[in-house]
Length: 183
Image 1 (cartoon, rainbow, N blue to C red):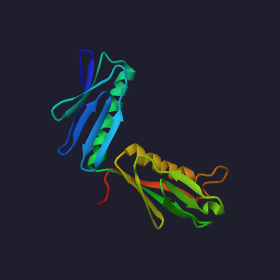
Image 2 (cartoon, one colour):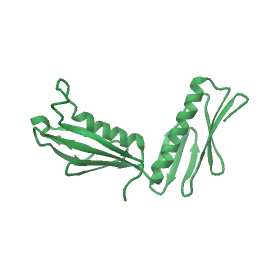
Image 3 (cartoon, rainbow, N blue to C red):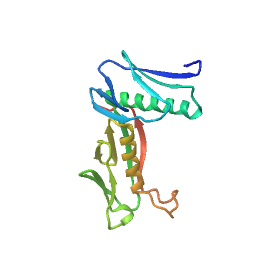
Image 4 (cartoon, rainbow, N blue to C red):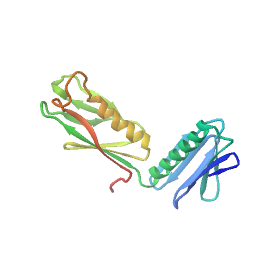
């Protein structure tokens, strides 16, 4: 909403979720856990009221309006993450050499990709949980950035340049993104 040189956007805080702020760090606590993020931009301010988070900018320029929208989207994703969570589903596809995928420590290990002897690794970031069952890989977590980056790391670990993708379709691919974690 724009009022005389001010842009302001509000986010309703659902029941069971608490939002607090210390300095520039916003913390969101919910039934699935806690997320925190540092929000710093010179002309954008965040205020927490009674059941509402307000993001505003005085006399905004185009970049300031964009940052207000960005902050609102990040806070909404944090609230969604601590209430219902995020899930990415990946599919293991091979036609030439059978791949073996396993989770070890904080990495996903991919063996025998295109007949290679050296294993490939993908980092798990953001406190996500990765499960491998058959030809499916599931990445679950509270942080959309962590889940998305983990899924991208797994997909990137099996990318191979110089091959025709129509013929050599071996790899691991993201097939579904969801904002609801299956219980």
